[in-house]
Length: 142
Image 1 (tube, rainbow, N blue to C red):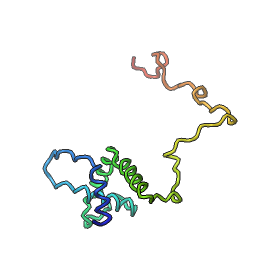
Image 2 (image 1 turned 90 degrees about the horizontal axis):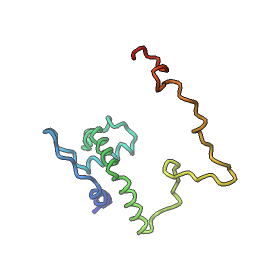
Image 3 (image 1 turned 45 degrees about the vertical axis):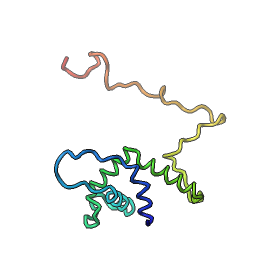
Image 4 (image 1 turned 45 degrees about the horizontal axis):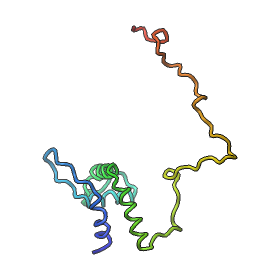
């Protein structure tokens, strides 16, 4: 078994069952081919609509929809955790190549010397564009 087969054996069980086909048409692109299309687009940076049909990945929109469905099903988070666990168990995590992304890490709370966090709730101006009373309405319809 090569590396791609080994990786696929980890990914395949995480994928949700495809929904039943609603209409007749083309056969469903196999998940493995769609995954290859997704990885190709993400690796090369090309736009989804320019995914070459000759590669057999299905259309770009098919791969994009599969990516969205798998994301919604939590496949990527599960796969990330599975790969981390696998690498950790083999002592193959290289922590010198890690980085912290602020979009994934909660910011530290302010310390006691920094003073209280500024609240903007009391600083907001009153809403002057609408009024709960008819008198405040600008509409002539009543």
